Length: 112
Image (cartoon, rainbow, N blue to C red; front, top):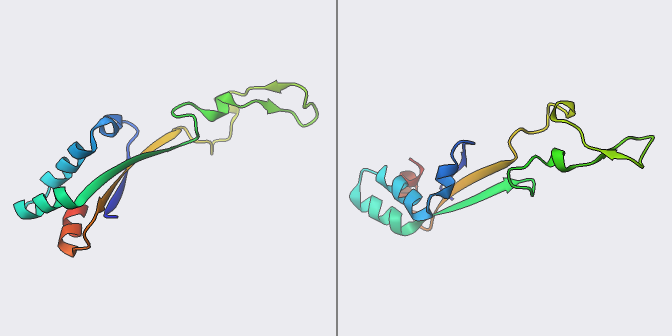
C-alpha cells in the first residue's frame, strides 16, 4: 500500500476515470523513464466508496422518528432539526495506490 487519497466532493470526474488512466497520471509525475515504466507494471489503483448504504441520499430524510410518549405515529424531521454533528456529505470516494514490489525506490516514486 503506497498511499491513499480521499477524493474531494467535487472530484467525481476522477472517480469516473479509468484506473489505468489514473495510474498513467501518477506515472507521469515520475522523472526517471525506467522507474516510470516499472511503476506502470508494478502498481495498481483501487477505487472504493464509503456511504450510508444510500449512495448520495441523506439517510436522515429516509428515517421515521417517533416520540417517546407516542410511538404510534412516526414523522420525518427536517435537516435543521438534526444535530449539527450529522454529516452533510453522505458518500466518500477513496483512491488507493498499491505497489506489488517492496523496492524502496519504486515505493518512493509512487508516493510523490
